[in-house]
Image (cartoon, rainbow, N blue to C red):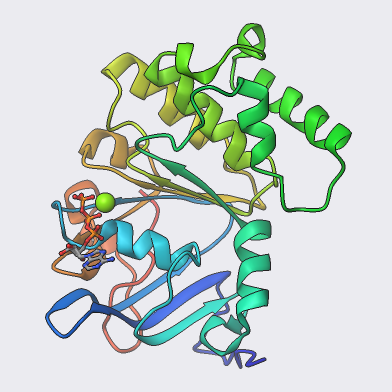
Length: 254
Ligand SMILES: Nc1ncnc2c1ncn2[C@@H]1O[C@H](COP(=O)(O)OP(=O)(O)OP(=O)(O)O)[C@@H](O)[C@H]1O
Ligand SMILES: [Mg+2]
């Protein structure tokens, strides 16, 4: 397993992408030479036009997809050098996913959907039930625990999806347009719920088309034509961090 050598000019980040490319066939270059760093304890937003590569980037970060080139260092280990079995373990242990269209089973109850998030972790059904029950309280759905998800509103469904994403206590919560299908009041509640997940040992990334939502995160990136740069519309240039090679990395906190 390749472990990153950290020198004086090379701070060790929890997660680091270095010259990451992702192509689909010969014609589509969804990500081009992406460099970025991420630390726990922070909130990040990603904005950019449709088709610019945001979901592709999130999928690579969350180990749902592998890059075509470049290096992805996770906790100091080069993920491009590790086995598929290790990738699956990390995906399950380190990441939680929240999607715009929820990805829930409409006929199953709220608690069944949340428990499904921990199905392959080896923990007992009783423990999964306890964790799910606690999280349903955290997301404010206590009274709906046994209702089928199909009976819930969009905002309520997204709360179920967040509880499911949190059941394995992920280090990084990855949210792909989590408020895209919600009205502004529901979107505000969901955004707050997601931002409340940040702790010194956890981080969140939110992909969004909404600049106001993006501005509520401490750092923000913009993706254009597969390239990532700091979101200058909500930061001053003096707060922008660059690597030694001049590539933008984790933008400074606002
Ligand atoms: N599995 C795939 N096969 C072929 N092309 C793909 C695949 N996944 C993504 N792409 C292409 O990669 C580019 C980036 O797609 P991506 O889904 O990352 O964009 P996005 O920024 O998330 O867009 P949106 O805001 O509409 O969700 C697009 O041109 C898309 O068609
Ligand atoms: Mg997308």
